[in-house]
Image 1: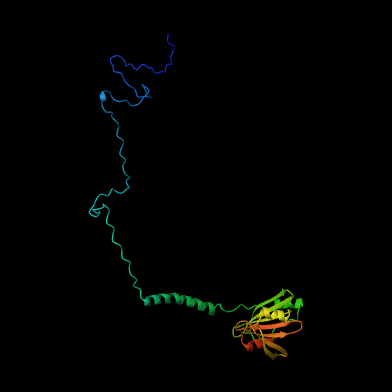
Image 2: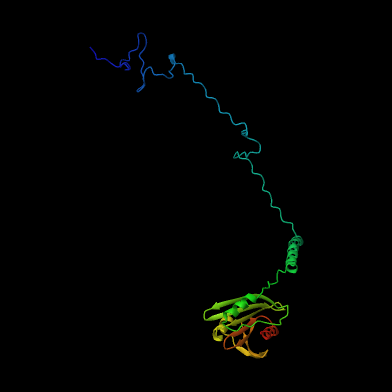
Length: 253
């Protein structure tokens, strides 16, 4: 008596039913499995044709050969290169264009200088700096008196430095030149090389308002007047003319 076999076991005997030829199944194939089977009688299997992909509606139609194609390579003949247009502007036209640009700039510059005072320095009140120097009582403080209204004070500063203090007053002369009035408690041998140059030399004496001033050379086209006193050194330096330097020195009180 043979042992019991599972219900899903495939019989090893491949003998077909009576009247039918034996069927060989490929290796690994399970008889009776679902799926398409070859038709009997060797007829070819009928397979449903897959639908042909249609091009999108907005895609361009395929281009066929045309007379414009290159007969040798099948490529279209490239279009002729456009010749760069040669500039026909004359020097006169360029000058007119430049003039059109320069006229508005000149008008704006004239308005800025004439009506807004663009080239004029801002005038300030030197009183706070002078009062600060007087309160410090480091050296006797002098200030110009009797100068005309065309003399303008453009800077004023009191500053303590190593070994002393300085009072600087900057002026714009009637001719539009700059002059600085410096009063300092520093020794002259230290002050003059720093404010003028190390090569600065006295050029003679001049009497102004009862005081003896020394004339000195300075940087570039500047010149200087120096007053040497026991407790202070007074220096007037700038690119102003000699008569304007002398006017400022004589106005000190």
